[in-house]
Amino acid sequence: MADMALLEQMRQDVLRALKKPPEERRWAMIVDIRKCVGCHACTVACKSENKTPPDVEYRIVREAEDGAYPNVQHYFMPVLCMQCENPPCVKACRDGAIFKRPDGVVQVDYSRCNGCSKPSACPYGVLHKDDGRYYTEGTPRLEPYETAPTFEYGERQSRKNGAAPIGRCRKCHYCLHRLEAGMLPACVTTCIGQANYFGDLSDPDSVVAKVAGGQHIYLFGTSYKTGPTTRYVSWGPGEDTCGACHD
Image 1 (tube, rainbow, N blue to C red):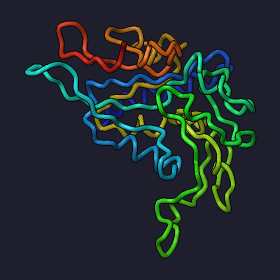
Image 2 (cartoon, one colour; image 1 turned 90 degrees about the vertical axis):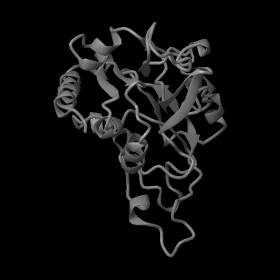
Image 3 (tube, rainbow, N blue to C red; image 1 turned 30 degrees about the vertical axis):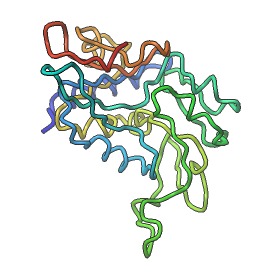
Image 4 (cartoon, helix red, strand yellow; image 1 turned 180 degrees about the vertical axis):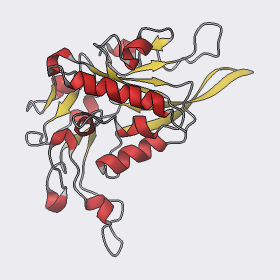
C-alpha cells in the first residue's frame, strides 16, 4: 500500500511549486526500479486517466535481465517520456506542434499536430500516433469509458467523430491537468511499491530534489545525448547491478 505521508509530502511540493512562475519550476519524475514489482498498476492508472487507445502507451513496464549465469537478475523497468532537455521529437516536428514548456515538460499541441512521422524520432519509443481505434470497437457498442472526454494539457479532448487527438502524436505529459489542479500524476498515486518520486526539481526541499541528490541515480540512454529529466534509481556498487539504465 502506498505511503500516504510521502504522497501528501509530494503533493505539498506540487502546491508549493504552483505558486512560482512556470519558468522557475521544473517538473521531474524519478523511478526507483529497485521497488518496482511489475504489477502494471501505473500503466492501468495512466490508461484510465488519459483514455489512451490501443498502441498508445504513455507508461509501460518492461521486463529485463542483467548479468551472466549464475548471477542473473530479473527486474522491472517502467518507461515513460523522458521530458528531455534536448528532445529529438521537437527537432523532428516540422509544424512546431511539439515544444518544450518553461516548466520542462515536452508538450504536443493537438491543434497544430498533423501526425506525421515524428514518433520514430523518439529514441525511447514513447511517442505514439493515435490512429482512432478503440478497444471495444467491433462489439455491440463502444464503452463509455473509452469515449469519455479527457483533459490533457488542460483542454477538453473528446476523440469523437475523428476529433483530436485522433491522428495526432501523443505522449506522457506528467498528467499536467492533474498537476495544475494540485494533484500528483496518476501513476505516482497508484504505485503499490512507492517507486515513483515526483515534484519540482528546482526546489531543494522537495522530495524529488532530495532523491535526485542521492546516490545511484542513472539516466536512461545517455548515448542519445537527450538530457532526460525523468531519471531512475538503481543498484549501486556492491549491490545487484542493473545495466539497462545507463550506457
